[in-house]
Image (cartoon, rainbow, N blue to C red; front, side, top):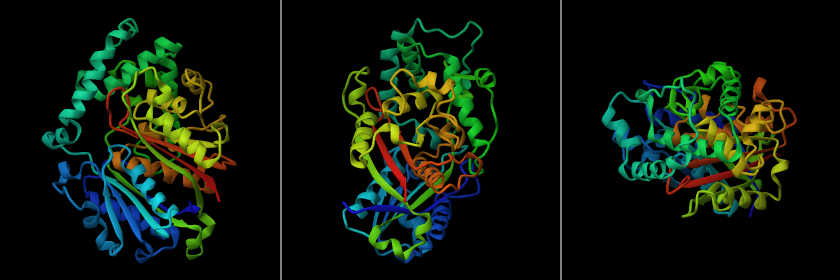
Length: 412
């Protein structure tokens, strides 16, 4: 494999963008990434464009990327559209990485853009209520809920049915299983959310930029116990883009901001027992990434993980090897994953606070980590960060995510 570098990143603010189309957000992110790299559209030899919901929300089902990026002059080269649920952006990056590493292109572009907010309930249902997805997650919840029937909320807890989600029910069941097996507490899960909301106050691109104490997180409306509203990712619009190149092409760009890609791996889930963590998609993707990079989890300076719920951060840090299995909640409560801690996780604010525009999420993680390794993340910069890791998972099948992607970066 050839060496691969990130030379440009761009991201819109994540949030609610009623006045912007999916394509316009994509163009803004790409224009920023090109400017960051000192690149022109005709430098791009291969493009991978990720989107999940545009067909349902805007009615554009095909060649979404071409419609979005041709007006910028990105044309003529290799072009592929990608759909892989929440790992869409990470998958686009993985494919771009492999294209450059394999010698099939010197410069590639990965883009993820998503518009999820709509007042049209039928369109939202078409995105989030697909029958096979609902069948998978419902079967998981109904099959495993009896195992945690004895892990009960405090008597005063009331679930707000207006905001209840079957997907958060699944996270809640997993959280309660973790509480039962390892003694994880409700307060420890809240500590994850409070930490991430604090981090986002230093991120001008985050959807939310409001501090929460642990007590305020616990006092939030309950979606599915033990998950309160501040513990869960919002519905978001936004886009992110990354320009990659080979070492041979690095001289064409401003190499001062280059970050080396040591590894990018993507693994699908498998049929397995819920307790068999070693065969989970994220565990296998992380191991493959560490092998590719020639590193160990202890070598990572900063990480962004897929915290669609506060519990998910605990699960991801454990499955990836960053934290010992069963100790994720303890580590969060002790401040180990906070800025200034042993291994800062989600300095961007994570999905819970930065936002979660599905197909843009994974590239948003890489935007953050590139800034971190450059020392350009402002007040949330992890001082001395040398190596970074992104974990992004998406979809649901059986007992886990349908796919997980892990990327490892290093200061060039």
